[in-house]
Image (cartoon, rainbow, N blue to C red; front, side, top):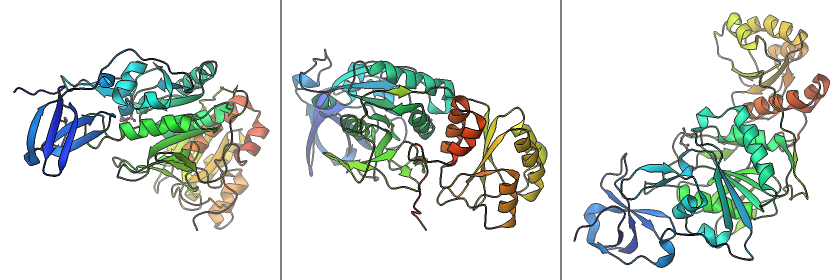
Length: 410
Ligand code: DGL
């Protein structure tokens, strides 16, 4: 019997048997593994030499790709696709990983989501997240506003590299939310046995059904498939290049977890009765990583024409003293300069060392325990919407959970 990728098969080993669609061999690694997509959409890998029997099986009707029927009593969730690995599905015949463009494509990847919600889906663009730009963040925010007429929750599949910039920008732009906005990504593509796409997407849909009124990121909690974590959109960061549990909440605990059910650990903002969008962004802001040996003319050019800058300083928030005159001059000319730390964990403090005190006297704003990327996005948003004196004050205030008053990790 000739069995090909795309066939529905039964595979038996000494440990048991599985049924599902035979996927083409993954493009990278795991060459000795046969990948089967189970009926619920989850991929399993079976070691080729352990297979005792493989034969064609009968596929159940609901696993066939077809028309989607909306069910009464289920909430409507909008999937706003932006690209990245998560927004793709595998063509079982060719092995090609295609962009998921329609609700049918997403349901084909994760058939179980139809049990959770009626799905509306649209790709606003299909890009790698390194190609994201502030104008695209605004486009996503406006699309979320449009979906408020139809939806009870929003899920945004997104490339993982810059997902936290987008989550921060949406957190600031969407001042009030009548539903959860859940960003989700995947570290391993959907043709691999270790893909996290299935569990992340279904968990994101579950969170989108809750009474949350915030922007969050939902990703794997550990390197196994036990649960996902809910991270606040202004606290999350990709901390590993490839692990499935790459996303961590920094200087804050995750907001909750998703297994069978969604469980929140503590307080969170509840759904509002309306959506308020403030979608201006001033792009004249730079994010500057200081390093020993940084030349003042480089700093000068990074500040040239800017309205604001966020510095990632060393330790408690320092740069070398020879850069001070440039900073002093720019701040005098009206540039808003904020200080964050390369350490990421902990709080900046410009009162401890003389360099810190001089930076503070020059008018550099210490940004507490805010993540540098979040500070960068926040400054763009504040400069786009408020006058200068308000911007300086609000940079140090906690608007969306981005700054904590208590000290967590000391
Ligand atoms: N470069 C990645 C991105 O951020 C692609 C893979 C992924 O989805 O993370 O878009």
